[in-house]
Structure formats: C-alpha cells, structure tokens
Image 1 (cartoon, rainbow, N blue to C red):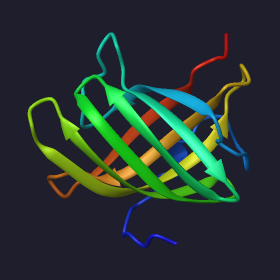
Image 2 (tube, rainbow, N blue to C red):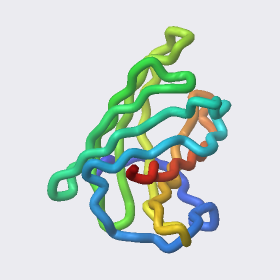
Image 3 (cartoon, rainbow, N blue to C red):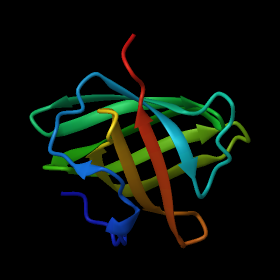
Image 4 (cartoon, helix red, strand yellow):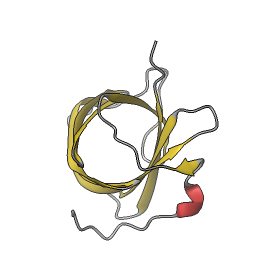
Length: 130
C-alpha cells in the first residue's frame, strides 16, 4: 500500500461507500479546494485489474496527468503526476473513497495534501454512459 499521512474526513463522503471495480469508468471533477472547476472540467479515465488501478486525466488547469495505485475495498491509495497549464509539474499521493449516489452514479472523494502542506479535498462524479 502507498503510505502517506493523509487525513480522511469520512463526513465529506456522500452516498453509500462501495467496493466496486473502476475499470473503464470515466469521472469529471465537480469541486476541488485547489482548483477552480471550469466549464470544461478535468476528466479522469480509470482502468483496473485485480486491484491495481491506473489512468490519465486532462482538462481545466491540467495539460496531461497520470495516476496509479491500488484499490482495497472502497478505498484507493494512489500517486499522481501532471503538468499544469502554467507549466508547473505537480505530484503527490491521495486517498480516495468510492461511493454510489442515489442516482446510481459513482462518486470519488479524494483527500490529499496540497503544495502548501494543508489537507485538500476534490470530488469527482462518474460520467454517465451514453
């Protein structure tokens, strides 16, 4: 498991926590304490095989990003790296809780430490299949 001292506030998790594969699931960012969510939010493509999770993301302030980690039940432990539109390279670790909303779509509540050393929170919502 990726070890990082990341505080998880379970009261921020909405919906029922769920142990589910994220293979071929796409999410879009809904809110983040470290980014303004634009009209074209960051999109995240997830892949998973036997608990190993990886993917990519782009949009909003991100030119290109990659993440990888593991899923243990309803919890992800991941590392991420991306290049921001302002040219900065960003990297870190996060702990993410998977939950299912009343409408049936998945929600990811991500806890991480920002560049300022303070706890941060991002929420992503599953993009419904057409």
